[in-house]
Length: 214
Length: 244
Ligand SMILES: Nc1ncnc2c1ncn2[C@@H]1O[C@H](COP(=O)(O)OP(=O)(O)O)[C@@H](O)[C@H]1O
Ligand SMILES: [Mg+2]
Image (cartoon, rainbow over all chains, first blue to last red):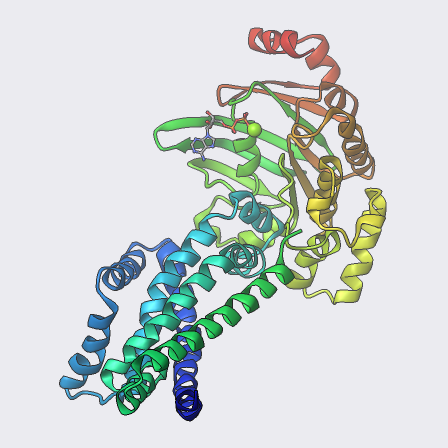
């Protein structure tokens, strides 16, 4: 027990890093997803194509390869120098962005065409129709899938430990080898991830209930 | 002076021509009912009048604006503000209350202030007999109530023309009367209306003219008493014998 008590402050420091990266990356990822979804649905072929290539490239490659590509690959060009945290945030963001793009695209397409027609017939522009009529309904419908993807992305952040980011997993590794108590340490790390994901789910359920279409 | 002029209007979906040389003149304050068998192009015709469908050929002039002339640089969103539309399936915004459905256009498009828009919306709700539903969501209303809200929503933009596409076809029979009553009232107040309908009684009573469409053509048009009492074309006779 005292091993856990001693390790806990350090693990929680790691959790802070995990949450910091997660929150920034998920917001960026969501914005990327929104833009890419709109490009994917835009009436301009070349934009659809660019969006599709991005989504397919991300979905068709492992996360860890994307991470190495950004951190080692891009850095090796000596054009810019990304520290590990920045590289981690970027990777999680562009990875989640591709999945969010697909979720948002499907959500937009699931809204009945009659909604758009009603809005346009009133005199709304295409952009206003998206903003006031289609997206608010689509987001309500997408919330469960968005929550799911966010949980996946949170778990993906544990892979960032391989480029030396001092996240929860990395701190777990350090503590496990320092204390020779791998079983207890990894159990605690697992419980911490579980609690965070559980809280995330609770928040999502709360929002879902709040914005439910009656 | 016509408020709607349609000349040689054609519309194709892919290789299928759905509207073939449609010509029509509609004067201010006229109520035109469009009847005809299903698939004859009635909805498509109506949707061409506010460019919900892109036309393939011909001209549509609304209130002096040739909305089909690409060189005219017409702002179609502006024109649509003057042309209200009511759909068979209501298409209310389910995430907004009845009041918000009605005020959304005035607030976001016209920059009407919220209190003023709300006051106007309540007036319109009075008119359609649904003031007590202002804070309900569309999902809590019956079909007939939804359609009356949809009419109020369209009227909130203060349009010069109202288009109705089978407004009562999706309603239970006992709901039809309330909606038709609202439309009659609107006609009485001098609204220019184009109504696609299967309600022959309404067409006869309220219509100034009735257009019979079949196979993408306007086959016959006349005053209701003439068209219903003394149809000229065999296809009109055949259709009327089925529905009357
Ligand atoms: N978006 C569309 N794509 C392809 N065909 C369509 C489309 N909309 C209507 N049509 C076809 O055009 C014809 C006329 O349809 P419509 O105007 O809806 O007729 P009505 O309202 O008189 O029943 C029908 O054959 C219909 O299948
Ligand atoms: Mg129709």
